[in-house]
Image 1: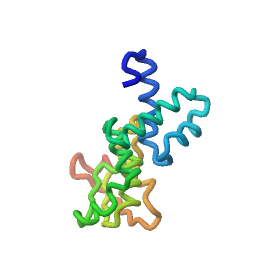
Image 2: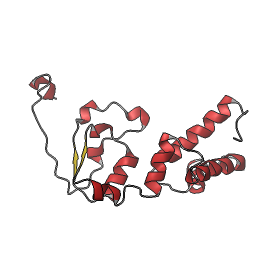
Image 3: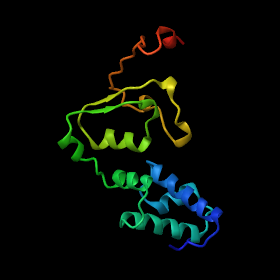
Image 4: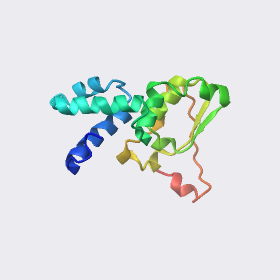
Length: 157
């Protein structure tokens, strides 16, 4: 690959920008992402990040995050989830991911059940969101005021 013998800091900078693109639900085009998020980046940087995304789309550069971005961009969930499942159950929704949430809400029509406790959110550092804050207004939300694990004092605010 073109950055095989490049310094670690350079590789890290590219990977950081690339991963941010892969996790961003607002952009499907790397050039637009770069223009709006890193307008002062060099043409060298933009060119190679665009190449990285093209390599991903051609299945030559695949990471966990880039596969998820491909699923998002190419709507892999569309039809598949609806034709294979009667319902989707999401546990720990307080630590859900914007990309997955958008795919589930926009690319599927099966009923969804989101379960979680916003006060137990622990993955904000990796970009997790509280899915309950992002659900459509018409969503039926049911709160529970009892815990069977450690007793009712845990439910008190």
